[in-house]
Image 1 (cartoon, rainbow, N blue to C red):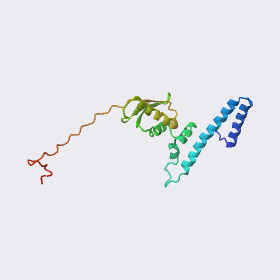
Image 2: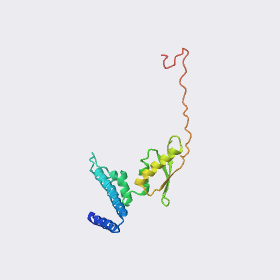
Image 3: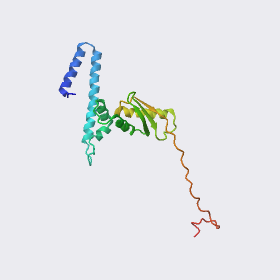
Image 4: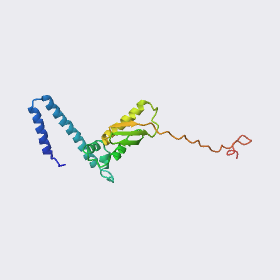
Length: 186
């Protein structure tokens, strides 16, 4: 991929917009200009975030200078969109899942279908459909930024838990003949 300068990109955008204007379709020209504005805002926000994250002064720089960028949803989505994100899909999926309020376990991702299977790892309240759907939607939202190759999330039932063991201990000492416990009899 060859680098395009800002001047070259600006010239190409103006040529395309001029061609649209020549065709006389004012609605198409306005829509194209709006697309350019939205994309400029999106990329401008991403660049501003990069500058902010890299410009923060901390006591110590992170061991991995990319870590603040890779952890940021906007920057990560831009890197992924352009296939520049240095982490593989499983790592990005794990990063997205770690942000969920409800802990889940990755039960498998099928790259050919884009389906990610998740399993709750803790009780999520009532177990009703709205709780399941809110967990699924939270996962989809997080994955959209970090792993857009995940196109669907299926929640599996939680794995059955082993019954809790009942702890059996010794009985507290019985009260003495005078009605006081042995600990207070002295």
